[in-house]
Image (cartoon, rainbow, N blue to C red; front, side, top):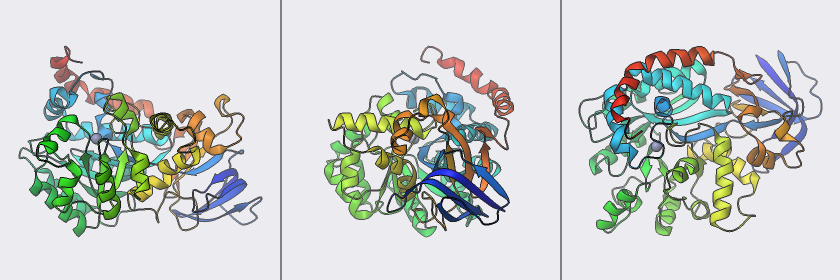
Amino acid sequence: MAILFQNAWILTMDDEFRAIRNGWLLVEGRDIVDLGEGEFFGDCDERIDCRGGILIPGFVNTHCHASMIPFRTMGDDCKDRLRRFLFPLENEAMTPQLVYLGAKYGIAESMLAGTTTFVDMYYFEDEVARACLQTGMRGYLGETIIGQPTCDYPEPYGGFELAEQMLEKYKDNDLVHPILAPHGTTTCDEACLRRAHELAVKYDTLMTLHVSEMDYEMKHFADMGTTPLQWMDKIGTVDKHLLAAHCIHVSEEDARIMGERGASVAHCIASNTKAGKGVAPVKALLKDGVPVGLGTDGPSSGNTLNLFDQMRLFANFHKNENRDRSLFPARDIVALATRGGAKALGAENVFGQLKPGMRADIVLISLEEANMFPVYNPYSALVYCANTSNVRLVMTSGVIRVRDGKLVHTDLYALREQLRREMKPFLAAAERYTDII
Ligand SMILES: [Zn+2]
């Protein structure tokens, strides 16, 4: 099957940031095979007229808990949500079916927003894998490993068993990439992080966890005379396998160590600033050579699962923090949301750019809506003007998943009804917390 995109404004995100104003791009099977300017005169099975719209590599969401859809808008402005009601409610009311439908809904929302790859950490994570395979989402999926009983395992650190099952089950899968997901630096002990890291090395995959995010976490390590990151480094768990989520409070020394070891960061600006936690020092991290990708966090932390929000907030907060309008031009921010994310996942040679040999993970952004006129600079339009309503078409691994702004394989409203029905016991359990939420 060969699919041709024509009449497109192609932003390749390659080393030269090549942009082709009147371009075509040819997909065969799951890969991009060729692209160029003007007319394409070869054969193909389907021609897609992009009507001058912008073609970009799909967005890469480097930190998410998609199945937390049922928690959205619950206790948004409440302090210490994690321990007051998130953990208790998860333990009481999360089921495999709720994780599956939550993931499917979260994936639908993400795809409609132009995301083609996401990193996810949750419970019953194999259900998220099932949702990825059904919908065509590329997922880096980690079963949560944590030092307390959870909804899917009665023993602390029981997640290892489930994680190892996934590591075996999805070896060499094109869409599902199992990773290790110990929860965080204070919710997991040293032995847990060492073991998770060993498995990440053994299976040549990622280890992701929450790092330098919480005030109490920083105090815990400050009392020991160190930082979370330096403690992790001391126990030998900081290297190219590490994808550290948040890193709000990393020091200059932490950033230098991460750069030296090849570790990467999932930066969640919407979630972090909504919680009043602070802004990660991305300028310093990039200066030290740390790959940084953007992440939405879960739908109850950042509330939306789209990277347009992250790009816009990234621009606003970092320019403001540094009192520098010229810092992080729009082109660099689009790069963080696409190729930068792929680099943070160690997959820069697989997706994140539009060039021959790359997976055909492609998004068409329409310029026909009111908010997209005029467009002098397409990167500016993407960062400062665009929203999810401009996403026309989404392809992953050469298959069209969103066409004319609608999911091809899923009826969103039927899915929502299914999820609503499945949420009934969850909503009953949540009533206990009505005074908080
Ligand atoms: Zn998180």
